[in-house]
Amino acid sequence: MIIDILTIFPGFFEGPLRESILGKAIQEGLVKIRVHNLREFTEDRHRTVDDRPFGGGAGMVMKPEPIVRALESLQAEKPQPRIILLTPRGYLFNQVTARRWSLYDRIVLICGRYEGVDERVSFFVNEEISIGDYILSGGEAAAVVVVDALVRLIPGVLGNKESSETESFERGLIEYPQYTRPRSFRGYEVPEVLISGNHERVRKWRILQSLLLTRERRPDLFAKVILSREEKELLEKFDRFGATP
Ligand code: ADE
Image (cartoon, rainbow, N blue to C red; front, side, top):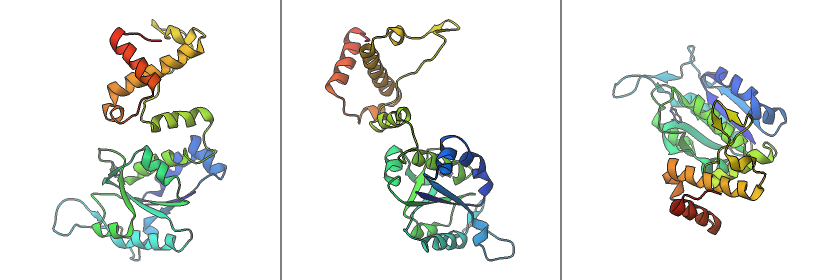
C-alpha cells in the first residue's frame, strides 16, 4: 500500500513515521508513506496556501489550487488512489472504515488546516472523514491516527496477539483487562482466576469481563453486537446470581 499525505507541516510526520509498529512496517517495505508539502504546489512568490473567507469572518481558508494541483500530480500515477480529506466536518472514522480502506492499493490523505478548506475541494475527493468529535488544529494528527489504524491491518504488520485484539474490537467488544507481575501491587491483587492455572475458567472470565466492560462503557457498541449462546449464558448467570467464572 502507498499512502500519500498532503500537508503544510511535513515535519509533523517525522517522529510518528519512524517509531514503533509504523516505523517497522515502513522499514520492511509493507507500506510506503510519502509526505508532500502543499507549498510545493503553489505558484506565487509567497507560496500562499490560505486566504481570507468570502463573506467575511475570522480566520483563514485553505485555497483550492495547491490541493487540487497536488492531487492531479498524484493521479498521474497508477493505480488511482482513494482520496480522503481529513476534516471535523466529515463522516466519523471507525474500524469498519479502516478495514475498507486497507483494501486500497493507494490512499491520499489531505490535511486541512486553519478554519477550513475551500468547499470546492470536495468535488476532487472521494471521502471527507473526521476522527472524532473534537477540533484539532489541523488534519495532521488525524492523518497519523488513520495511518496507524490502516497499517495495522496490512498482512504481516502485526503479530497474532495484536491481530486478535483488533478482531475482537471489530466484533464490537472491548478487550478484557490484562495483568502482569507483581501479583500484589500496593494492595491491589491480580484476580485469582488468572493465577488458577485453569485455562477454561480464564477463557470464560475474559469473555464475561469483555461483555461487562462493553455494556458499561460502550452501550452503543453493545446494542449492535450479536452474542453467542455461551456469551448470553455467562451474562445471564452474572446478572441473576453475580456469578463469575
Ligand atoms: N481536523 C481538525 N479536527 C479534525 C478531526 N476531528 N478529524 C479530522 N480532521 C480534523
